[in-house]
Image: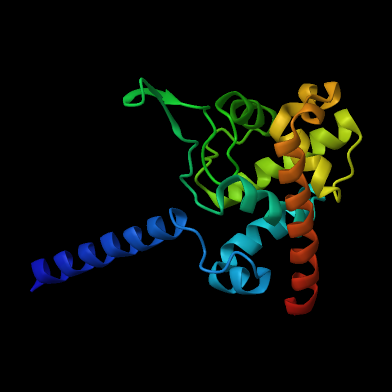
Length: 196
């Protein structure tokens, strides 16, 4: 009897772990409605609200950036590179997780905040990283925390690249930043109607 309880309990824990891992590794069902997204994954909203309180970055700006970077997929990675079309040569970059933070930038964040155990696959850590990074963008580049377009451009190009204007020669990136800004405005409208 005890063995059966132990096995059943172990199986339940295993399946629960699989379920939470599956949530991290799949996008929410409705990415175009902030209220439904928050209802499906309330811990995402709580993580972004904590970041807004700590760093001042509005939830809708975070949401739009997460959408663009990873579609809220916790183990998202950039595509692989191939030699001759079939020999794997690694990834395009070291970007990883919800926030698509690069290895070096993630290490800077962990050192600066003392959050040594932070993981890019944890929405709480990824949101905190985004708040930290966007605050540095405000300090270094003078971009308001509410300016989703320019925050995204600095997020993509890095603080130095943004200061140099490297984004201005990349029409595709400017188009993406416009879409991020539009999505942030849409999320802001939606969130104002569903918050209780």
